[in-house]
Length: 265
Image (tube, rainbow, N blue to C red; front, side):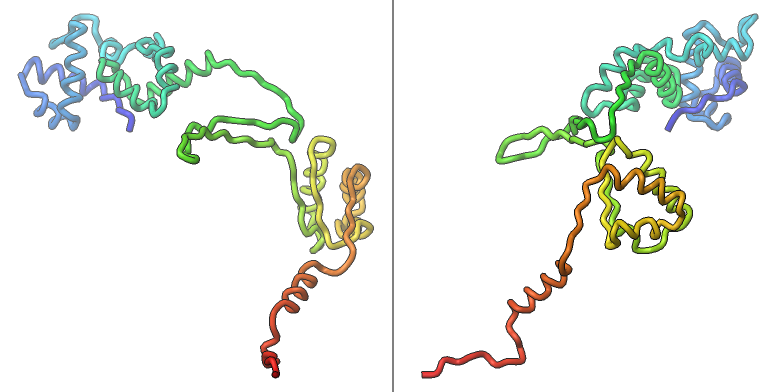
């Protein structure tokens, strides 16, 4: 969880109770509803800047805030070596949370959420982006998975390859009438993929009946114009493969109604 800033009125009260009344940090924390560690840390920062109680002339709550938390106008990352953060993040198992904790041990005054925001701002200013345009399914994208697996007693590196938006299957086309939203979605799909990537359409209906199955004459013309004129058509004839496989299975199984044959001597 990120640390929250203590209200400036409480910081002034910490200095007063510590300098004027001599209270312990535990008692101050109980009075102001903060931890004794937070009270000690804030008083220590003010003391390092030469500010005690009573407050010096010219030091108001805004000036005290700049001493305790730093000046946000001067850049939230003035105490961060972002090059070091970037190098550390390349190491396995390192997170921003761990780096923030290490910086806090060295006196970094900001909370975790503030630290993450600074890192994101620095990355957005320095990150180099190269944009490349590919046709759908034209390139294979390979990335290192970052893990190893044991194969035949040896360690193997894992790479993941993906053919970006390469192929689309449309099965059982035309089994039910298309609704208006279905027709528009189908036209958009065909228009986006036409001339860019492949699509396979499997249907029990002959192609001559697709126009009627789509329903709307105008949209059907537009959809089929993008499908049938630049396609490889495969028409299967004959019995159903499920029926054929079922017949072969029945022939191979023995008939339980007939008794087994016995050799006669």
